[in-house]
Image (cartoon, rainbow, N blue to C red; front, top):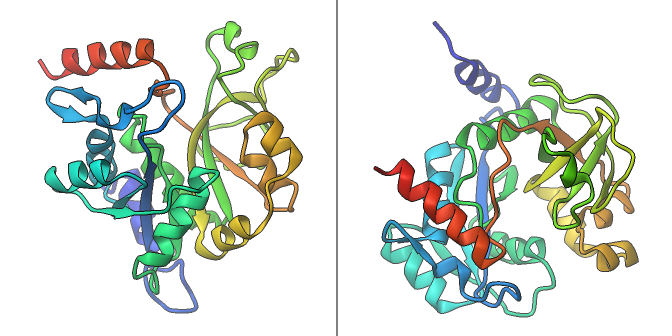
Length: 267
């Protein structure tokens, strides 16, 4: 019996009409040591492996395309390579992770790349099926830019500014891929079309090139949300429903929580 992902793989074979070849995705994971809230977090270890290398291996398990880490620190590059991964050194002057992944894309042999997935380097608990789903939705719908969101189960999250919310045109289901209307950090109007945004993006290669050519908008700088740069330059963002809301490593408390979960799962 064919599985859901078998069917979507078959669809991929016919998705690129111009070249008559399967669409090819490159996964790039931006990473740096100088995070303000938890410096050095990419190299913090859980079960003897760094966080960044855990994320790399998760991306490889998703098996949607080649995976590379884009880092501004030699220590990260060395760690990823030591653990069997690929990594590229980038400049240390990038304002956002998206600008960093574009530099890595340019340095990479990208002539046959169609889609670029930006996977966060501080989410070692990201669900592999969610990565696959976003990639499949991008291919099936020929979308310029896609991302993930999950249901908000705790109402306190609506007021929590560290949790980004996305409002969609339609209520999210396992099968649709509606447009995002807005992104915000704090929201009081609770309804069925507001979800917790997950920091994973998938771009058509040309869309990524256009995105980084635009200046940071005032809203992007004010709210520290790159999504505004896309929306304010008429780049539509489509949203797929994620199964889970992985914890990101932003603080020491986050790291200890993730460490506990991952160590328990490894027993």
